[in-house]
Each structure stands twice: as C-alpha cells, then as structure tokens.
Amino acid sequence: MERIEISLHTPFIKLEQLLKLAGLTDTGGFAKSLIQAGEVKVNGEVCTMRGKKIRNEDVVTVDRFEVIVAAPVEE
Image 1: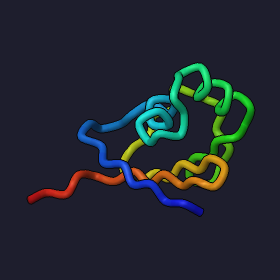
Image 2: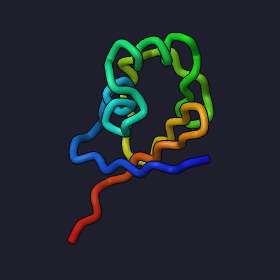
Image 3: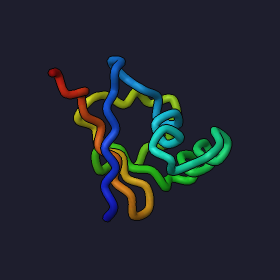
Image 4: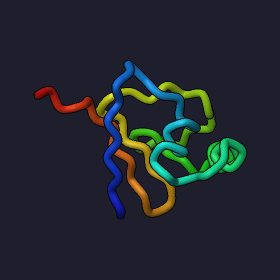
C-alpha cells in the first residue's frame, strides 16, 4: 500500500477534490466515475458520495493508494 499524506488548511475538502489534490485522478470526471463505481473507501467503508466532506484524520483508499489527511504542522 502506497501512503500519501495531505495537509488540510481548511476544515474539510470534498472527496473528489481530494482525489485530484493527491494526484490519483487528473480530472473531476474520472474522480466521479471512480467514486460512483465503488472504487473509493473512506475510513474503510465504500463511499459513493463524491461531495463527501473529508476532514483531518480521515483515510481514503483507492486501489493500492492510501491517502491520509492530516492537520498542518504548527511551528
């Protein structure tokens, strides 16, 4: 499983936007089709809502990629 860490500077990001930000899809259309096909899991559960709000500490899994959402590190 390949891990990708994403830091959010906002309270949440929509699932399809996260997939693009993580580099797992290059278009919103492809993100939408992955999500609607049941290929995306959020915290271990299949999620078919592309507008699902992803927050800090959520884990999104697509194929062999695991995207971990973390709060930015305070300096």
